[in-house]
Image (cartoon, rainbow, N blue to C red; front, top):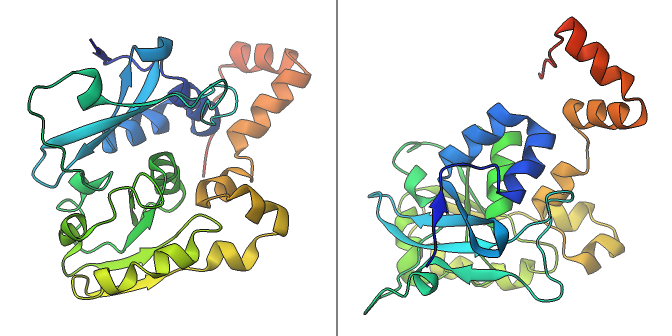
Length: 240
């Protein structure tokens, strides 16, 4: 049986992002996107799929490395589903976009759709004037039923490197529904061949530039006396 904890201390992705954004901002992002924690694999992240009415459709459970923030894929990919773990009888799965519950809260925001739930959360920190949703995979929940939620909205698709052509084929499905829809080639235009071979996404590019908090952490690792100085003087890092 799966148990969801309120505490994020055992959530490796939460711990990683606290080192990048700080505890207060990470907690805000996790609460905004209703990210949960499972006891599976000793603590893992649950990306709940909640629709615009507040109904939870299911949750994807994934294990992350707390040091790198990347998914654990060895010796096997640690991915599961809440409805499978809970063994719900006669369960009828109808997925929705990750972050779909935010649509009524921000009716005028331009919507950016990415593949990874983690990327939607991270991008929301860097570009908070946009609404970031995720499909949960190259195909994920990208279907006619799901995109109905995007009715009369301005939508921009931001595929992972290597997925642009596949997502361009989705445009005819979206055009009758959305007010405006476009596909961004931003990542393809700026990527190196090596980055393309890795299939990087927007979050990889955003995290490649260290934040002030990360720079400070690196300084403390090189010289632990800096932490002592911060504690003694009760200093606080001010983010822009």
